[in-house]
Amino acid sequence: MFGKTSTTEDVLSGVDLNGKRVLVTGVSSGLGVETARALAAHGAELVGAARDLAKAESALAAVGAKIDLVELDLASLDSVRACADGLNATGKPFDIVIANAGVMATPPMKTSDGFEMQFGTNHLGHFTLINRIEPLIKDGGRVVMLSSAGHRFSDVNLDDPNFETTEYTPFGAYGRSKTANILFAVEFDRRHKTRGVRATAVHPGGIQTELARHMTEEDLNALIERMEARRAETGEEGFQYKSIPQGAATSVWAGAVAKADEVGGRYCEDCHVTTRVTDDAFDAASEGVRPYALDPDNAAALWAKSEEMVGERF
Image (cartoon, rainbow, N blue to C red):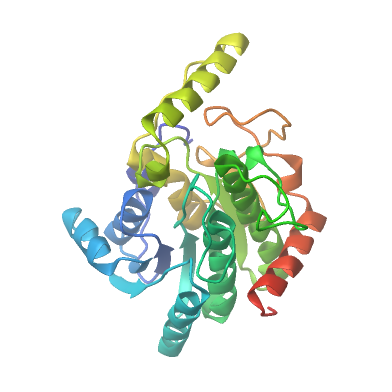
C-alpha cells in the first residue's frame, strides 16, 4: 500500500489524530519539523524537544506548525534529566514518542558526560529520556526510534563503547549508535508489550538534511559513488534521495498508522517492516537489517551496559 515514495500526507490520509499526544525530539530542522507538522495537521497535540528552542520555533513557524516546545540537549544527561523531570511534572501522558534527533559522522568528540558523541547523543540520551518518561506512555502507546541503514556499518562494542582502545572512524561510530537504536527498541518492546506499549525502529532513507553537516561534499559524493558502483554490479536502480516528506513518512506510519503487532520489536523502512536480513555492506538505497541489530541477547546486554554508563537502572 505504501512504499519508498510515499509521503507523510499519503500515510496519514484519512487518519484523525485528535486526542492523541505526541513527543518528537529534534524539531529544529529536517525530518523532525516535517514529522511534527504532519502529525499536528491531522489533529495530534505535539510536544517538540530541541536543543536550540529559537531555531525550532522559527523552523516550525515557517511550516505553520504550532506546538509546545521543551529544551533538550541529548549530549548532556543533566539536560536530558531536566527535560524528563519537566515532562513528568505535567503528568500529561503520551500516545506516541518519536526519537528523531541525532548526529551523524562527527569527528572525534565527547558529550558533556564523557561519552563518544554519536553513541552518547543518539543512544544514551534517548535511552535515559524515554526510560525516565516511560510512566507517561499510555497503555497501547508507541515508541519509534530513528535508526538508519547505517547500522550496517557496525555492531555495538560493549567492551569499548567510547573508542578508548579501538580506532575511531566517523561512520563506524555512527553505525554503532544506529545499531543501538534498533536494539533499544527490541528490548524496550520486550519489557513493555504486556501493557500494549510497542517500540520499533525505522530507517527514513537517504535524505539531504542537516544531519550530514559534519560531512564534506567530497565525503558525500564518495559515499554515493560507492553505492552506485555496487548497484550497477547487481543491476539495481540507481540511488535517489528522498524528499523530506518521503523521509518522515516511515516514522509517521510506524507511530500512528501501522498495527502494533506488525512493528513491535522490528526494523522498518519505506513504510513497511523489512523482511530481508542481510550481511551485505551498507547501502542506503538497498533494504535490509543486520542480524545483530535484532538479536534479543545483544539487546539485553546493551541495556545493561547503558544502565551502567548512565548510572541508572530502569
